[in-house]
Length: 188
Image (cartoon, rainbow, N blue to C red; front, side, top):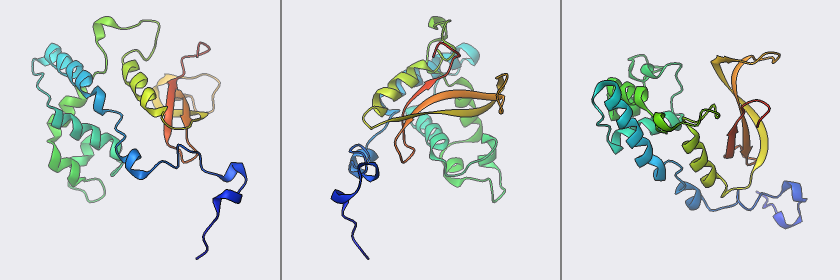
């Protein structure tokens, strides 16, 4: 097996300094850790306002975040994690949290206070999560592109795929997201 010398490669083929960080540094990168108290607080406030049981714990919150971000088992509907079918059942999720508890947290999940929202910003409910994530993502070298997230609640006239959210995404060449901004029309 031949060893590749990186000091003689053209600049375009060299890895960015941020991408060459040690695995240990990337492993300790946790974008939700500092924000869990805020999100957990708003989630419990919302749950109390809706049905009086705002008792979501940090452990339950991390189970939910882990299930959503892990990508271990991708299913069309989250309730399918608890089905007994071989292709949809996810024992790590179903053993960690009950289905109804997961759904309760998902229904009440909030990143911002509904009483103090910026009416001019379409994504003001999740803006604090965007801002704090972007602060942490900027530790890495970005490249900018746009990315569309399928969603059937927003119609974009004149586009080939008309039902989606559009985001400006800064990412490394390994497709690791380091910055994202929601598209809100010509103002962004």
